[in-house]
Image (cartoon, rainbow, N blue to C red; front, side, top):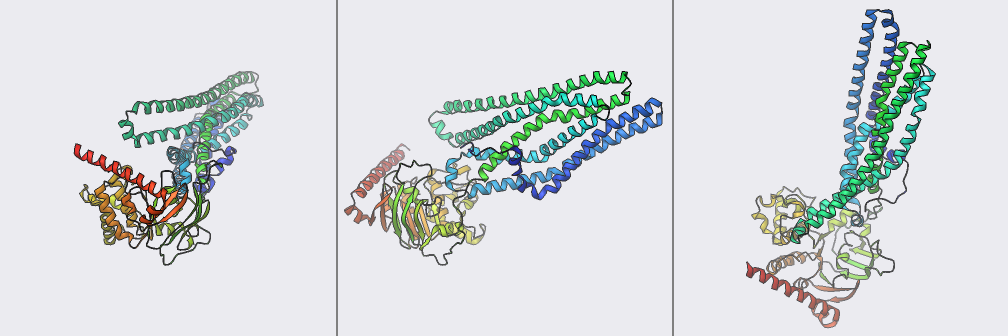
Length: 608
């Protein structure tokens, strides 16, 4: 996902959405604005002093007054520099505070949004919003917003003052400047489209880099580095074309911002000389007029940059709020229920589930699941690929919510529990074991926020979890449990990652343990050791285990057969072998896959 289909609102309304974040520091920002305005007003006073000095002391030859005039100009210049310094001092720190709050809110929102949101959004798009767009907003608040308002006011005040010397000069300057408003409007319209496209393409580019880095082993193994580079090059060229389009729009605006004032200067010079020759204007007034016009040149020229900055910031704000405005469908209930003494009964009652983007013509992926796990019972879930096993395991912890029916823990609908309580009672281990760039200790104790990770209790929990998961290899790492694993744990083997993920689930000491084929990457001998240790945990814990090996089925008290989104059989292994033809087919498939894995393992051992 790269853009929102929401209707486009005005730039001012879009930027006004930042006010809640800026509200705590508004007094400092307002003081920075007035400091900048004071500096601008002082810069406009200098031409008035010059005019008075030329028409008075210089014309009269009064040297002391000429010196005082020069001192006055110097003091005004120093005062202007002081207010510029105050403007920066007032706004820089508050702007970083606003950036901090937006970034915190954005990350907090990412954590709270459901998995269905992350299924739709590219990680690079979220990363570019988190880093580039929020940083752009901070720079706009600290610099662009104040200068744009102050420079526009400076131009307006200066234009009014131009009439002070002669109406013809002021009128000429303003009439010639009218085309700037047309080109400014055209620029805002065209540049806005290009700015949005550019920022979205930057997000796509970030996604491409991230995918290539994470998949570098696959690209190298299949020799597809050149293919990835060609795809990346096409994306870079698209972004380059967009950036060139932005540059052309800025260039056109800068051209007119340069040309129009020069034309106005030339016409005013001709008119001014004629007025001076006619005696309608003194030399000092003519000098003051052009000094004022010169003072207005920087504010006029800066409008091109500031308008492009404004449009970029507006686009960045839109992109940020596209995430902040996303509806969070998985939230705590208004009147939560608490389970004081959890027993561990997990029940699926009439459960239906379909993904949001599934075609209406398709049947539900889970089509009326009825299944009850008794407290302390281990239930194996088996089925062919695509039957819905993994989807079913995501429902107890509300990674997704059912579209119909209920999932109950000890008779309580899981939607009636606070999320933190629910996920304290139910723990998961996934087939795709994800580790974080942190120490082994921090990864394993991730679910134990109730203990100090450096305490003796934490050491005991860690040691027990590692022993159950047969992850004693941790103690052979350079720093033992304090060893930092690489990003996503890629410095470890697949089996090592799975064992640490299993240890993390066990260390949480949940009432219900949901395991989505967590042993698939283990060799047969290690799997047997893990299963033997798991039996001690499962003796007192309710467990739902997705089984892809016959040995995993042996862990279970009962087995549930999932076929085309429905439970078609529940019983012991022996009962199902006797009564369920589909179960016999599934088990034979699992045994065939298991034999292939064992054969491949023996071939590897022989080659070694």
